[in-house]
Image 1 (cartoon, rainbow, N blue to C red):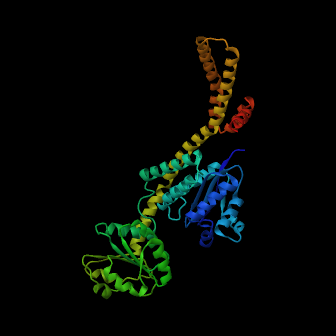
Image 2 (tube, rainbow, N blue to C red):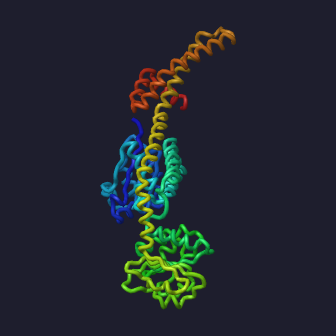
Length: 427
């Protein structure tokens, strides 16, 4: 029975955040699941991709292991009723479906923020984890490198990855642009609601910045600070901390602005202070720009920038899909060649074995010159004989009839016997 490349996919499209959290895996959990899949089911070409928005498991096997994989995931995550989660997963049974899904996910077509740049690195890490455990064979190696090459084409040939398409990432990108000439810019983030937390996570794209975070729920700030290595201060100290900051990002839900013109006027502004207001209603008084050196950007400015980028990305989707289609076509051609290669090699071995046996049988008394001539003639004959079935096999690949042709040639030349003989020699 032929192994097929299959996939299980759970994402923000099919499951709410509380379900996504249940099945989400860190590196250690994903590694544990990979090892169990290898030990229990001898799966090959396996990839586990787990992010905040999706958990996907790709694998090659003769059987559908969806239920078994969910159960093993339940063991790794200590879930009480993992089987009930199967309804949230989309199952891909065929090679073409699974390959297409992995391409779309890797390019960012299936991301919550379309064209998300982080997914490329997440896919690379997932592939590296599989390779480290020897769970990536020739099929997955070729598939992943085709995906990486496709990703380069998308970046170089389209606008699909240009700019920032989420408010949080657009805010961080803006900070990077405006502080590009500032050595180790000091950034104060006030408020860790949904947008504020997202901004904090995207701050990893500002590696030289000195980041301080604060939140009314102090424990949340401590948890995020520990995860990303940020300095954490109590919320009561946030106004005083503005004096030392080059950039103040505010994401606080309050009916009245907490950063007023008078407060900014009392700050020590040597050259500039950048204020970014991500709150609705606004938490920074719009008149602060009357104070020399104070620069204010609000959520509307940033949303406008993100929306413009998103429109460009959406317009690029047909171009991206064409590039993906070309890459998948190229990969399938390679895959078809790979499918028939073992049969071609077995056929060559069978014919070569027959040729050698007949030479030994009839040329025992032949001198070296005679042997060389006949050896050359029989090799030429064998090459001409094998040419027709090889051409037919490759033609069958293009017609998607390779399996039928492989079975026919295997039966005709008794190639299964050849495989059995090889196994006997190994043992």
